[in-house]
Image (cartoon, rainbow, N blue to C red; front, top):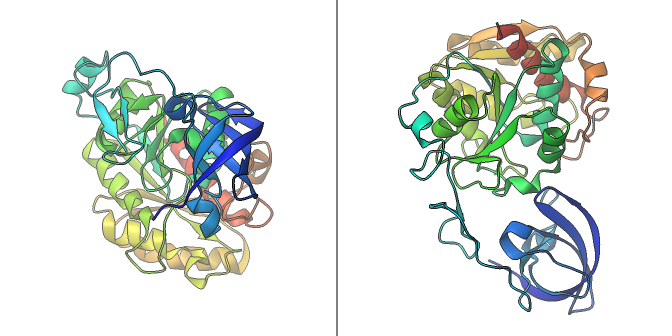
Length: 356
Protein backbone atom coordinates (compact mmCIF):
# COMPACT_ATOMS: atom_id res chain seq x y z
CA UNK A 1 0.00 0.00 0.00
CA UNK A 2 2.58 2.60 1.12
CA UNK A 3 6.37 2.53 0.98
CA UNK A 4 7.74 4.54 3.90
CA UNK A 5 11.23 6.03 3.99
CA UNK A 6 13.14 8.58 6.07
CA UNK A 7 15.60 11.01 4.60
CA UNK A 8 17.36 14.33 4.95
CA UNK A 9 16.65 17.38 2.81
CA UNK A 10 19.79 18.23 0.83
CA UNK A 11 18.47 21.22 -1.10
CA UNK A 12 15.38 23.10 -2.23
CA UNK A 13 15.09 22.72 -6.00
CA UNK A 14 12.27 25.17 -6.74
CA UNK A 15 8.89 26.22 -5.45
CA UNK A 16 5.57 27.57 -6.65
CA UNK A 17 2.43 28.63 -4.76
CA UNK A 18 1.53 25.82 -2.38
CA UNK A 19 4.40 23.41 -3.17
CA UNK A 20 8.15 23.00 -2.68
CA UNK A 21 10.30 20.60 -4.71
CA UNK A 22 13.26 19.12 -2.84
CA UNK A 23 16.27 16.84 -3.17
CA UNK A 24 16.30 14.31 -0.35
CA UNK A 25 19.06 11.91 0.67
CA UNK A 26 17.20 8.75 1.67
CA UNK A 27 18.49 6.59 4.53
CA UNK A 28 19.02 3.61 2.20
CA UNK A 29 21.66 5.62 0.32
CA UNK A 30 19.53 6.64 -2.64
CA UNK A 31 18.50 10.16 -3.63
CA UNK A 32 14.92 11.21 -4.31
CA UNK A 33 13.11 14.14 -5.80
CA UNK A 34 10.43 15.00 -3.25
CA UNK A 35 7.46 17.33 -3.02
CA UNK A 36 6.14 19.03 0.10
CA UNK A 37 2.98 21.03 0.66
CA UNK A 38 3.85 23.60 3.37
CA UNK A 39 0.20 24.11 4.31
CA UNK A 40 0.08 20.46 5.37
CA UNK A 41 3.56 19.68 6.72
CA UNK A 42 5.35 22.99 7.24
CA UNK A 43 8.29 24.30 5.24
CA UNK A 44 11.20 21.85 4.86
CA UNK A 45 14.71 23.29 4.95
CA UNK A 46 18.09 21.73 4.09
CA UNK A 47 19.16 19.48 6.95
CA UNK A 48 15.62 18.61 8.04
CA UNK A 49 14.71 14.98 8.58
CA UNK A 50 11.58 14.14 6.58
CA UNK A 51 9.24 11.18 6.50
CA UNK A 52 8.48 10.18 2.90
CA UNK A 53 5.89 8.21 1.00
CA UNK A 54 7.90 6.78 -1.94
CA UNK A 55 5.12 4.72 -3.54
CA UNK A 56 4.91 6.83 -6.72
CA UNK A 57 8.66 6.60 -7.27
CA UNK A 58 8.62 2.84 -6.85
CA UNK A 59 5.76 2.52 -9.35
CA UNK A 60 7.51 4.74 -11.89
CA UNK A 61 4.55 7.08 -12.22
CA UNK A 62 5.07 9.90 -14.72
CA UNK A 63 2.86 12.74 -13.54
CA UNK A 64 3.18 11.85 -9.85
CA UNK A 65 6.79 10.69 -9.85
CA UNK A 66 7.74 12.32 -6.56
CA UNK A 67 8.43 11.09 -3.09
CA UNK A 68 5.81 12.89 -1.01
CA UNK A 69 6.81 14.55 2.24
CA UNK A 70 4.43 13.24 4.89
CA UNK A 71 5.93 15.04 7.88
CA UNK A 72 8.91 16.92 9.27
CA UNK A 73 8.86 14.97 12.55
CA UNK A 74 11.43 17.09 14.40
CA UNK A 75 9.73 20.40 13.55
CA UNK A 76 5.98 20.12 13.35
CA UNK A 77 3.97 23.08 11.97
CA UNK A 78 1.75 25.12 14.29
CA UNK A 79 -1.89 24.17 14.67
CA UNK A 80 -4.19 25.79 12.12
CA UNK A 81 -6.32 28.72 13.17
CA UNK A 82 -9.46 30.30 11.81
CA UNK A 83 -12.78 28.97 10.53
CA UNK A 84 -13.29 25.93 8.38
CA UNK A 85 -15.25 22.72 8.92
CA UNK A 86 -14.91 20.85 5.63
CA UNK A 87 -12.65 17.82 5.96
CA UNK A 88 -11.07 16.73 2.68
CA UNK A 89 -8.98 13.64 1.93
CA UNK A 90 -11.27 12.34 4.65
CA UNK A 91 -10.17 9.54 6.97
CA UNK A 92 -6.71 9.36 5.46
CA UNK A 93 -3.54 10.28 7.38
CA UNK A 94 -3.44 13.52 5.38
CA UNK A 95 -7.03 14.65 6.02
CA UNK A 96 -7.19 18.44 6.11
CA UNK A 97 -9.75 20.95 7.32
CA UNK A 98 -10.61 23.77 4.93
CA UNK A 99 -13.11 26.60 4.77
CA UNK A 100 -15.69 25.75 2.11
CA UNK A 101 -17.36 28.55 0.19
CA UNK A 102 -20.66 26.75 0.71
CA UNK A 103 -20.39 26.10 4.49
CA UNK A 104 -22.17 28.14 7.14
CA UNK A 105 -19.08 29.98 8.42
CA UNK A 106 -18.10 31.16 4.96
CA UNK A 107 -18.60 34.81 3.96
CA UNK A 108 -20.00 33.40 0.72
CA UNK A 109 -22.60 31.18 2.35
CA UNK A 110 -25.43 33.68 1.86
CA UNK A 111 -24.60 34.06 -1.85
CA UNK A 112 -24.51 30.30 -2.35
CA UNK A 113 -27.26 29.14 0.00
CA UNK A 114 -30.02 29.67 -2.52
CA UNK A 115 -27.90 29.94 -5.67
CA UNK A 116 -29.34 27.73 -8.37
CA UNK A 117 -28.18 29.10 -11.71
CA UNK A 118 -25.02 29.76 -13.70
CA UNK A 119 -26.94 32.29 -15.80
CA UNK A 120 -25.95 30.63 -19.06
CA UNK A 121 -22.21 30.67 -18.27
CA UNK A 122 -20.18 28.53 -20.71
CA UNK A 123 -18.61 25.55 -18.94
CA UNK A 124 -15.82 23.88 -20.91
CA UNK A 125 -15.31 20.26 -19.88
CA UNK A 126 -12.30 18.08 -20.68
CA UNK A 127 -11.02 14.71 -19.55
CA UNK A 128 -7.40 15.73 -18.85
CA UNK A 129 -5.76 18.49 -16.81
CA UNK A 130 -3.21 19.08 -19.58
CA UNK A 131 -5.96 20.63 -21.72
CA UNK A 132 -6.45 23.58 -19.35
CA UNK A 133 -3.83 25.98 -20.80
CA UNK A 134 -4.81 25.08 -24.37
CA UNK A 135 -8.48 25.81 -23.69
CA UNK A 136 -7.49 29.18 -22.24
CA UNK A 137 -5.30 29.94 -25.26
CA UNK A 138 -8.23 29.42 -27.62
CA UNK A 139 -10.57 31.49 -25.46
CA UNK A 140 -8.16 34.40 -25.16
CA UNK A 141 -7.87 34.88 -28.93
CA UNK A 142 -11.24 36.61 -28.98
CA UNK A 143 -11.87 37.28 -25.28
CA UNK A 144 -8.62 38.05 -23.45
CA UNK A 145 -10.62 40.02 -20.91
CA UNK A 146 -12.87 37.13 -19.88
CA UNK A 147 -12.72 36.03 -16.24
CA UNK A 148 -12.11 32.29 -16.18
CA UNK A 149 -12.32 29.97 -13.18
CA UNK A 150 -10.80 26.51 -13.12
CA UNK A 151 -12.96 23.92 -11.35
CA UNK A 152 -10.65 21.04 -10.37
CA UNK A 153 -12.29 17.65 -9.93
CA UNK A 154 -10.84 15.00 -7.65
CA UNK A 155 -10.18 12.28 -10.23
CA UNK A 156 -6.46 13.05 -10.32
CA UNK A 157 -4.29 14.93 -7.84
CA UNK A 158 -6.17 15.97 -4.73
CA UNK A 159 -4.01 18.99 -3.78
CA UNK A 160 -4.53 21.82 -6.26
CA UNK A 161 -1.02 22.92 -5.26
CA UNK A 162 0.41 20.05 -7.31
CA UNK A 163 -0.43 21.88 -10.55
CA UNK A 164 2.39 24.22 -11.46
CA UNK A 165 0.41 25.14 -14.58
CA UNK A 166 -2.65 26.30 -12.63
CA UNK A 167 -0.45 28.34 -10.28
CA UNK A 168 1.37 30.05 -13.16
CA UNK A 169 -1.84 30.72 -15.10
CA UNK A 170 -3.27 32.31 -11.97
CA UNK A 171 -0.18 34.49 -11.51
CA UNK A 172 -0.28 35.61 -15.14
CA UNK A 173 -3.93 36.60 -14.91
CA UNK A 174 -5.18 33.85 -17.22
CA UNK A 175 -7.25 32.42 -14.37
CA UNK A 176 -9.34 34.30 -11.84
CA UNK A 177 -8.86 31.37 -9.48
CA UNK A 178 -9.15 27.65 -8.88
CA UNK A 179 -12.10 25.96 -7.18
CA UNK A 180 -11.20 22.57 -5.70
CA UNK A 181 -14.22 20.29 -5.33
CA UNK A 182 -15.05 16.90 -3.87
CA UNK A 183 -12.02 15.45 -2.09
CA UNK A 184 -9.69 17.88 -3.90
CA UNK A 185 -8.38 20.78 -1.82
CA UNK A 186 -5.99 23.72 -1.92
CA UNK A 187 -7.79 25.89 -4.46
CA UNK A 188 -8.46 29.60 -4.06
CA UNK A 189 -12.00 28.50 -3.23
CA UNK A 190 -13.12 25.19 -1.72
CA UNK A 191 -16.45 23.52 -2.46
CA UNK A 192 -18.18 20.27 -1.55
CA UNK A 193 -19.45 19.17 -4.96
CA UNK A 194 -19.01 19.92 -8.64
CA UNK A 195 -22.36 21.74 -8.48
CA UNK A 196 -21.37 24.12 -5.69
CA UNK A 197 -17.94 24.44 -7.29
CA UNK A 198 -19.53 25.73 -10.49
CA UNK A 199 -21.80 28.04 -8.54
CA UNK A 200 -18.78 29.35 -6.61
CA UNK A 201 -16.94 29.94 -9.88
CA UNK A 202 -19.82 32.11 -11.02
CA UNK A 203 -20.99 33.83 -7.84
CA UNK A 204 -17.79 33.98 -5.77
CA UNK A 205 -15.05 34.37 -8.39
CA UNK A 206 -17.31 36.24 -10.83
CA UNK A 207 -16.33 34.00 -13.72
CA UNK A 208 -17.58 34.51 -17.26
CA UNK A 209 -16.39 31.00 -18.19
CA UNK A 210 -15.53 27.92 -16.15
CA UNK A 211 -13.15 25.16 -17.24
CA UNK A 212 -13.68 21.78 -15.58
CA UNK A 213 -11.05 19.02 -15.62
CA UNK A 214 -9.50 16.53 -13.28
CA UNK A 215 -6.37 17.44 -11.43
CA UNK A 216 -3.07 16.19 -12.88
CA UNK A 217 -2.57 12.43 -13.01
CA UNK A 218 -5.77 10.78 -14.21
CA UNK A 219 -6.39 7.07 -13.69
CA UNK A 220 -7.25 4.59 -16.45
CA UNK A 221 -7.45 0.81 -16.69
CA UNK A 222 -7.88 0.22 -20.42
CA UNK A 223 -11.54 -0.68 -19.90
CA UNK A 224 -14.61 1.15 -21.14
CA UNK A 225 -15.75 2.32 -17.72
CA UNK A 226 -12.67 2.10 -15.52
CA UNK A 227 -11.19 5.56 -15.93
CA UNK A 228 -11.47 8.67 -13.81
CA UNK A 229 -12.43 10.78 -16.82
CA UNK A 230 -16.03 9.56 -16.66
CA UNK A 231 -16.35 12.64 -14.45
CA UNK A 232 -16.31 14.74 -17.64
CA UNK A 233 -19.76 13.42 -18.51
CA UNK A 234 -20.98 14.08 -14.99
CA UNK A 235 -19.67 17.66 -15.20
CA UNK A 236 -21.73 18.19 -18.37
CA UNK A 237 -24.81 17.12 -16.43
CA UNK A 238 -23.96 19.43 -13.52
CA UNK A 239 -23.47 22.42 -15.82
CA UNK A 240 -26.74 21.75 -17.61
CA UNK A 241 -28.87 21.28 -14.49
CA UNK A 242 -27.54 24.62 -13.19
CA UNK A 243 -28.55 26.43 -16.39
CA UNK A 244 -25.00 26.70 -17.70
CA UNK A 245 -23.91 26.12 -21.29
CA UNK A 246 -21.83 22.91 -21.33
CA UNK A 247 -19.08 22.78 -23.96
CA UNK A 248 -17.61 19.30 -24.38
CA UNK A 249 -13.97 19.30 -25.45
CA UNK A 250 -12.90 16.08 -27.14
CA UNK A 251 -9.76 14.22 -26.17
CA UNK A 252 -8.02 13.74 -29.52
CA UNK A 253 -4.59 12.33 -30.29
CA UNK A 254 -2.48 11.59 -33.32
CA UNK A 255 0.59 10.62 -31.30
CA UNK A 256 -0.71 8.17 -28.70
CA UNK A 257 0.68 4.66 -29.15
CA UNK A 258 -2.57 3.16 -27.81
CA UNK A 259 -5.13 2.64 -30.58
CA UNK A 260 -8.06 3.32 -28.22
CA UNK A 261 -6.87 6.91 -27.87
CA UNK A 262 -6.00 7.62 -31.53
CA UNK A 263 -8.42 10.02 -33.16
CA UNK A 264 -11.20 10.62 -30.65
CA UNK A 265 -10.34 8.79 -27.44
CA UNK A 266 -12.75 6.17 -26.19
CA UNK A 267 -12.75 8.19 -22.95
CA UNK A 268 -14.56 11.05 -24.71
CA UNK A 269 -16.93 8.70 -26.51
CA UNK A 270 -17.92 7.08 -23.22
CA UNK A 271 -18.06 10.23 -21.09
CA UNK A 272 -20.09 12.25 -23.59
CA UNK A 273 -21.89 9.42 -25.39
CA UNK A 274 -22.98 7.42 -22.35
CA UNK A 275 -22.48 9.37 -19.10
CA UNK A 276 -23.57 12.87 -20.18
CA UNK A 277 -27.35 12.76 -20.27
CA UNK A 278 -27.81 16.48 -20.94
CA UNK A 279 -27.02 17.96 -24.36
CA UNK A 280 -23.76 19.86 -24.78
CA UNK A 281 -21.94 21.67 -27.55
CA UNK A 282 -19.40 19.04 -28.66
CA UNK A 283 -16.59 20.91 -30.40
CA UNK A 284 -15.30 19.09 -33.47
CA UNK A 285 -12.13 20.82 -34.72
CA UNK A 286 -11.67 21.33 -38.45
CA UNK A 287 -8.35 19.51 -38.55
CA UNK A 288 -6.77 19.01 -41.99
CA UNK A 289 -6.35 15.83 -44.00
CA UNK A 290 -7.33 12.25 -43.36
CA UNK A 291 -6.82 12.58 -39.63
CA UNK A 292 -9.32 15.43 -39.49
CA UNK A 293 -11.80 13.30 -41.41
CA UNK A 294 -11.26 10.49 -38.93
CA UNK A 295 -11.94 12.76 -35.95
CA UNK A 296 -15.15 14.09 -37.55
CA UNK A 297 -16.30 10.57 -38.37
CA UNK A 298 -15.62 9.25 -34.87
CA UNK A 299 -17.38 12.22 -33.25
CA UNK A 300 -20.41 11.82 -35.51
CA UNK A 301 -22.43 9.48 -33.27
CA UNK A 302 -22.27 12.01 -30.44
CA UNK A 303 -24.59 14.16 -32.56
CA UNK A 304 -27.47 11.88 -31.59
CA UNK A 305 -27.42 13.40 -28.11
CA UNK A 306 -25.41 16.60 -28.46
CA UNK A 307 -24.93 19.57 -30.78
CA UNK A 308 -21.84 19.04 -32.95
CA UNK A 309 -20.11 22.38 -33.47
CA UNK A 310 -17.37 22.48 -36.11
CA UNK A 311 -14.73 25.02 -35.16
CA UNK A 312 -11.79 26.17 -37.32
CA UNK A 313 -8.27 25.84 -35.94
CA UNK A 314 -6.58 28.61 -37.92
CA UNK A 315 -4.48 30.82 -35.67
CA UNK A 316 -4.65 28.40 -32.75
CA UNK A 317 -1.15 26.97 -33.14
CA UNK A 318 0.35 30.45 -32.83
CA UNK A 319 -1.71 31.08 -29.70
CA UNK A 320 -0.60 27.74 -28.24
CA UNK A 321 3.06 28.57 -28.76
CA UNK A 322 2.58 31.73 -26.70
CA UNK A 323 1.09 29.98 -23.66
CA UNK A 324 3.09 30.88 -20.50
CA UNK A 325 3.33 27.26 -19.28
CA UNK A 326 4.82 24.08 -20.71
CA UNK A 327 2.34 22.16 -22.84
CA UNK A 328 2.53 18.41 -22.28
CA UNK A 329 0.09 15.52 -22.39
CA UNK A 330 1.11 11.96 -21.61
CA UNK A 331 4.72 12.98 -22.16
CA UNK A 332 4.06 14.54 -25.57
CA UNK A 333 4.66 18.24 -26.18
CA UNK A 334 2.96 20.53 -28.67
CA UNK A 335 4.94 19.22 -31.62
CA UNK A 336 4.50 15.63 -30.44
CA UNK A 337 0.69 15.80 -30.51
CA UNK A 338 -0.48 19.05 -32.06
CA UNK A 339 -4.07 17.83 -32.74
CA UNK A 340 -4.63 17.22 -29.02
CA UNK A 341 -3.88 20.82 -28.14
CA UNK A 342 -5.63 22.28 -31.20
CA UNK A 343 -8.81 20.42 -30.25
CA UNK A 344 -8.75 21.75 -26.71
CA UNK A 345 -8.02 25.26 -27.96
CA UNK A 346 -10.94 25.01 -30.40
CA UNK A 347 -13.24 24.33 -27.43
CA UNK A 348 -11.95 27.49 -25.79
CA UNK A 349 -12.50 29.43 -29.00
CA UNK A 350 -16.12 28.25 -29.09
CA UNK A 351 -16.68 29.21 -25.45
CA UNK A 352 -15.46 32.70 -26.27
CA UNK A 353 -17.96 32.92 -29.11
CA UNK A 354 -20.79 32.14 -26.67
CA UNK A 355 -20.04 35.16 -24.47
CA UNK A 356 -22.22 38.23 -25.01
